[in-house]
Length: 130
Image 1 (spheres, one colour):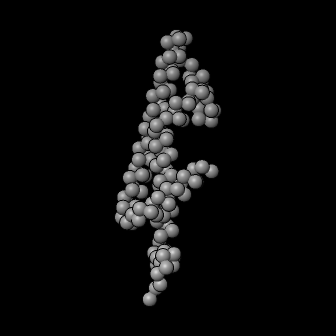
Image 2 (cartoon, helix red, strand yellow):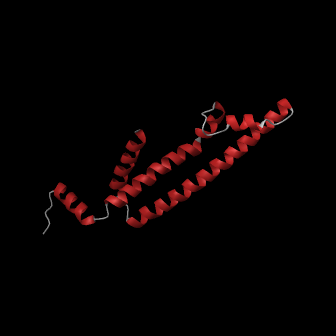
Image 3 (cartoon, rainbow, N blue to C red):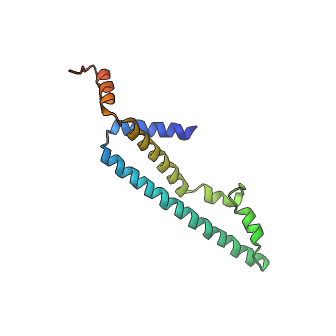
């Protein structure tokens, strides 16, 4: 629920900035690129973390118990071993990036017919259309 409120707040900020359509499209493209790169980074960090656990398991027991490692690193289980994978700076930035992406998309879709929005703004400002 808070995520949708954040998207709404971003949309209000974007409306107040009055960005051009080109600027919005550039920011959307950059957001999509950031989101893809962030997910790829998160996946590589996860695989590196699995290897760290495997090395520690081998050092402690003399062999790697892949069944155990698969159990504690599966995304279906909310294991404490994955907290550093779920809650880090990258996932926070991905969260913010997704909210901005949705707000920009919402703004572009809602401003497709500028004449209606211009009429609404003029009515609010007390201007009349001639």
